[in-house]
Amino acid sequence: MALTTLDPNIALVVIDLQKGIVAYPTAHPTADVVAHASALADAFRQHDMPVVLVNVTGGAPGRTERPRNMGDLPADWAELVPELNRQPQDHLVTKRTWGAFSYTDLEAHLRKLGVTQIVLAGVATSVGVESTARYAHELGFNITLAVDAMTDMSADAHQNSVANIFPRLGETGTTGEIIRLLDDSRA
Image 1 (spheres, helix red, strand yellow):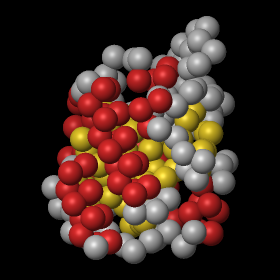
Image 2 (cartoon, helix red, strand yellow):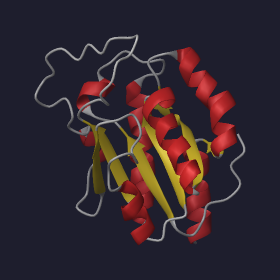
Image 3 (tube, one colour):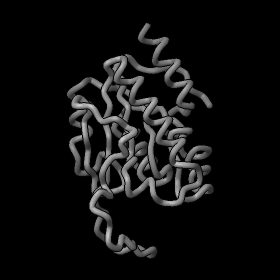
Image 4 (cartoon, rainbow, N blue to C red):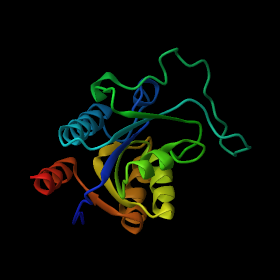
């Protein structure tokens, strides 16, 4: 873990912690991931820092070798988990691709607020979180990845992202480390 600093203008972006996705079997208990992401959201709100909550309602078109079997989804599939305690000032991004920047207003929203760094959390580590981190890196945002506030359907995929991809895109840390740094930088 190599977390060093947080920029003055930072935002939290939580990926796909929604009822339908947290119900899938994952490498780490989703209850722990949700608890950590909720603690981050509470800390950011306490310091009047932006919180962006992302859900997904579809997939990108195109042929893949692994078929998408969405089946009949329950009506509340895309609803954010209540533990995130969505507040009126939180920004909601609904995406239809893996990453939260493509075809959404996320970049414009963050730029309008002067955000230079994002903290990322959510599911799935190697899909939605990594795709969002890669795009944010290309856009020039500094990135911190809350590794205990994310998981994947595959332990190997999660570990690959955390160990091999994320250190090339930003800095990693735990929820506790990020909150301590946030508290210290805002004192």
